[in-house]
Image (cartoon, rainbow, N blue to C red; front, side, top):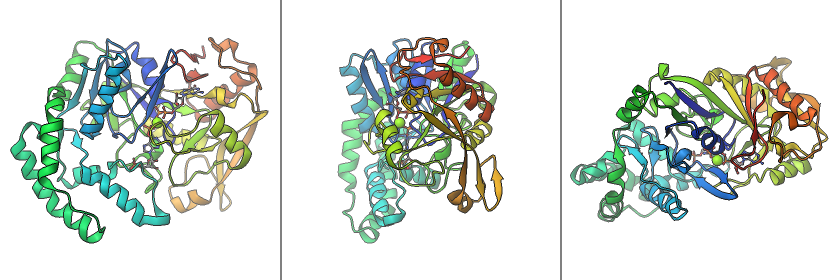
Length: 425
Ligand code: GDP
Ligand code: IMO
Ligand code: MG
């Protein structure tokens, strides 16, 4: 049976965790395919909240095998802490496995992430400071350490010594930081962390292909989102991996023909954390209202998210980049109190109209959104359990978004709870 991908279509935090959890009920395996603990995926089950960073969101179901794919960058200490937190909440984490090819986040990656952001000053990207960019950079430079290196202390130490020949002068001479002590680092990774990580290491490529061959259903869970993609996002204000649906193949070992359903997640408005262009951004009272009603603060970093109106130009681009088969629209309830709601249907710049983002980013920085204004519904929809129970204006809004993006909307979120969604017929 072919696999399904869950992909963010905006700048992250669309509700991928909630949707993965929702779809996982009908899956056998959930695979995280990129990113690291820069992600924060929040799921609320019977009033209890879970904030996942590295562990795939399907883990809350006892029947799901949860796979951390080769495309993920893993901080082993964070992974173990997350597993302990889940265990303490009664979740069986014995079904979590991690690819031996996944790269390790090392303490120097986090230090370099912090210090380069500081040196960038007003040009800082606003990263999560988790070491994500430096870890992927080492992967591309072929000097990264992988999870499988934990299985072989001699190799681990050789690679570490080699990489520190570059990192220590960089830290001390360029950034005026203390050097990394190779003995202490190796001791911590090999003696404190490896004994608990090693039993989880698996050949995840074989695992996913065997599962498909048995007719099992696989869900591929993306982190971050289309416009944070290293190739297709608003570079350099992006993350260092490929969240787009095609990244699900490289990050898991499945082939393109193994995928058949691509579910794009979009908020009924839009948010962004960190720096970078944001054509429909809202300031002032309206912005505050959406931040407040949507609890728009980072799931793990606690940072306030920037907010704006739904942007159909970006959504159309996300449709093309991901071959979206459907959109799951989340947080419609956050708009409950608005009398009118705007949707950006195109951009204008230099006398030209854009239905898709201009390729030249200097133009994107200057575009003026063209808005359509729709009536709000001014009614609480959080208790709706079927699509017909939504007020007509809410259904019209959903239908309009489907029309301007050209993608059917299959699920609409009306609250954070696992059961708080309705399905348009
Ligand atoms: P992710 O990173 O894409 O998994 O999204 P986050 O978990 O970081 O942020 C989404 C937030 O919205 C979380 O706090 C969810 O609990 C919440 N959420 C998800 N869907 C809905 C919804 O339909 N309505 C409301 N009010 N909250 C939602
Ligand atoms: P989820 O999976 C929202 C943003 C950071 C920053 C940029 C680069 O929860 O949607 P990084 O630490 O990755 O080098 O930061 O990307 N960012 C996210 N924004 N949701 C996320 O994950 C994000 N992960 C990274 O704020 O702008
Ligand atoms: Mg998040």
